[in-house]
Length: 201
Image 1 (cartoon, rainbow, N blue to C red):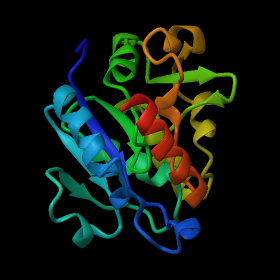
Image 2 (cartoon, one colour):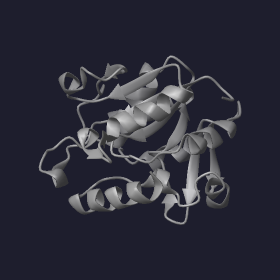
Image 3 (tube, rainbow, N blue to C red):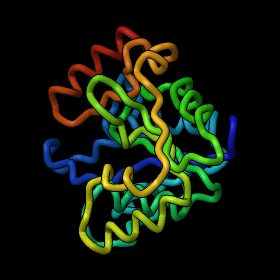
């Protein structure tokens, strides 16, 4: 690893499209998504943080469990809580419904970190991927300022801090299908995830 970094899992969603079922505990190929993430994280990070507003649900997860600092529900709130709790200056983030994140892609983002950068973010044809990115603690004041003013768009940060992108062509060298960015948002996605698991293992 290029820089010491904390791995953060964001588990704050309301799971509305899954009738309230916790997506972190959905199994793909007989293994829960949360456990798939932990397998990858444990090879890369010496600290793992999980952000959730339902800590009791995660008593069997080997991670530092933290909750949001602000009452508003937003991904930015989860990023702030995870970064605040991180023992290191840098934290890599992924959502708890991301079953196929590749350690090689995480490492590629970590390799792009430099002292003059506050965020390292993937950029693909679909746009920025702010939920699969590296953030530095220097982002905390700008995050807090936005949250206090109900400015909840993560991209609002990009005008206030130093951002470095890792382009799609570079990402595909370590993740040809960009499967790291696949999320299980709907029951249909779960069917697709099982098919992808059978293809890729």
